[in-house]
Amino acid sequence: MSSTRYKIPWLTMNIYCFGRNLTTASCCLPPVQLPTHKEAHFWYVLPQEVKCTNLLNRYFEILSPCEKENVLRMRGEELKKSALLARALVRTTLARYQTNCQINPTSLKFRKNDYGKPEVDWQYTDDRSLPPLHFNISHTSSLIACGVTVGSPIGIDVEEKQRRLKNDILAFARRYFSPHEVEMLAHIVDPELRRQEFIKLWTLKEAYVKALGRGFSASPFNTFTIRLRDHVVKGGIHVPPDVISKEAEITVEPSGDLKNLSSNWHFVLLELIGSHYAAICIEKDNTNAV
Image 1 (cartoon, rainbow, N blue to C red):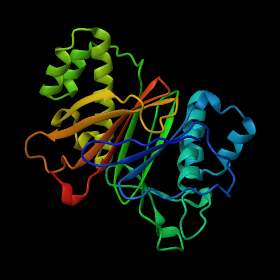
Image 2 (cartoon, rainbow, N blue to C red; image 1 turned 45 degrees about the horizontal axis):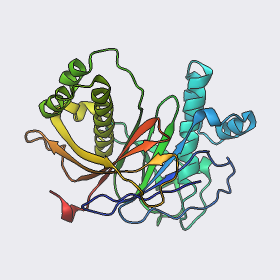
Image 3 (cartoon, rainbow, N blue to C red; image 1 turned 60 degrees about the vertical axis):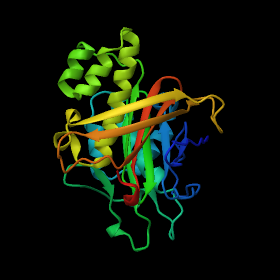
């Protein structure tokens, strides 16, 4: 288990990364302190490192009947395994946080908002003083991640750095990105650098839309602009070998008078184990709204 802390210029936002293996499927999970104000916890697992069949079977048993059905519906063993680990990661992670009562992973209930974003449904628990935990999940074929906050909406996205597009990057960007983002990509001559910047933008935009909790249809990518200026932090604080910290000034600018978008968000962009980008987006204090 490893952790690291990141700072962004206008506010200290702590991002703790926990990896790389899932905990046991036991109902007695080692407790973890709740995230503090404006702190996000980022948990991730590498599916190829989870090989124990007995452990996978135990994870399957903590899922709800609906989740089990969804896993079994997947075609191919790798897709089934990925779906299983995603749900197990959410349940075992949320159950570990220290609250006034011990939570069994199997007892967690979930619901979806009007746009389909999953949320914890605490109405079935006896303890009414449970903290307002927010979570979001993202995955690729090779990495599954879950972000957690208390009292602040969160959106995360992970993408493989080597992700390839079938279509021309600029043509794809003109279809989905804002004019400013397209212009920025067009000024990058090197094809590989352009592809990397495209993936970073896509990852950040996904995290923002997921944090809003309204879905792609209600918040199309071309209705807002992500602006980022970043550099690799050298000699960062408590940076583990498999996480590269990036200190970045990242802002979002909604286009027009769209009421369902805002610029009241903090972003962090990470590079995980040298092979993935991860973006985290959490809401600022209302008093700091731009």
